[in-house]
Amino acid sequence: MKRILAGVLLAFVAGLAGILAYAPYMPQMILEGAPDLIWSGRSTFAEVGGAPDADRLRIAVRPGSYGAELLELFEDSDGVALLAARDGRLEIEHYADGVTAETRLNSYSMVKSLVAALVFKAIADGRISGREARLGEFLPEAPGLSQVTLDRLLTMRAGIQFEIGRDSFGVAAGIKDTDTLPNPLGPLARLHYQGLMPQLAGLSVSDGGPEVWTYQNINTALLGAVLERIYGAPLETILAKEIWQPAGATSAFWRRPASTEMVSAYCCLYATARDWIRIGTFIAANGTPADPFLPDADWRTLLGLDIDPTLRAKGHYGFGMFQDVLDRPGETLNGGLTYFGGQSGQILSIMPERGLVIYRAGRRHQRLHSTHYAVWNRLSAR
Image (cartoon, rainbow, N blue to C red; front, side):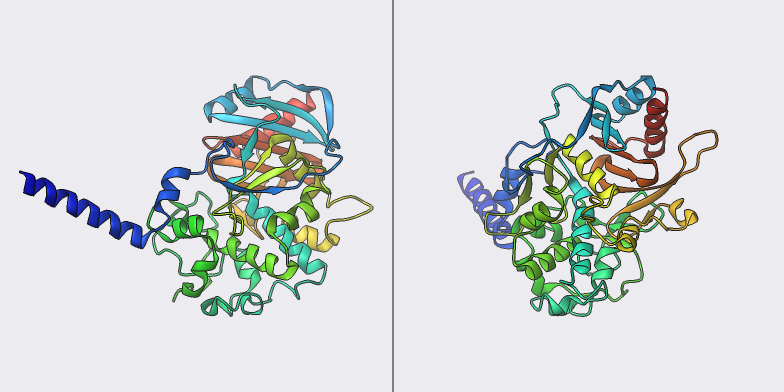
């Protein structure tokens, strides 16, 4: 019996040693766990500095109550926060029990949209020649991706061989690689817990090429590295200077694998719900009249404001942002919408023509169109 137990123990130790040799980040993964919706501080974070005057958000004396329809949508999807602003004024604000206006909530993939906006800003400012610039100009450490354009990364059509398996993303525009699904030994785990730089040399384009839309976190990680390279500054500093502080937002925290690594450009920026409304209002207004964020044509391209409604109706993904259309008969709210999307239905929705910005966070998806109609009807009833 002792020999059997000794053999089992030896096999266990050998197996554990093999796992740690292949995945040395495993202890960190166990300690950190999966990204939480509500900020707990259980990881390494970089601060996105807030604005000195972070009180620009105009708030109704009493932000309006939900109403029965919105409350049902919220509770049926394990909602955590739902806020709506019209013409820069916060009109609806509702939180689940235990969540407040000071609670920082995870962006999940919504932050991809901010990275895309920063790329457009860098192009507008002349730091990058254009969306057809190739990765080889910025990241020679990734020779297998030297011919991949920034446009392909922004539109999720880079065709990078990152993980072979695929699954449905829930939009008609294409598929989502399982690099975003839990696999403790897969490429995403290595990216998430080791950072981007150790992965660069082994990246290549798949044989299928870039024709198919494939939603991959690695694309945004690469864009983040490009931004750091051209600005000579950390990504969190770039975001703070170009978007966060001009929007009047308070400080936020961006997850990173270690204190020496770049932030996870594709995920996990923790900010308050009110700050997400501030960011949405800033992007929807293209900055301020005195200091536009982008030239008007570039802003319209980034938000996909001129995308054909037939494409929107299928669920369109443009440059780091989703486009959809509201066209339900009998509803007074109609037209195109652009939104940042994250895991489990984190949404920052922008309708510039209506002056409408909606932020929603929760643990399961909330019906997108129904939420917009219910919010608008509630606002219109006042």
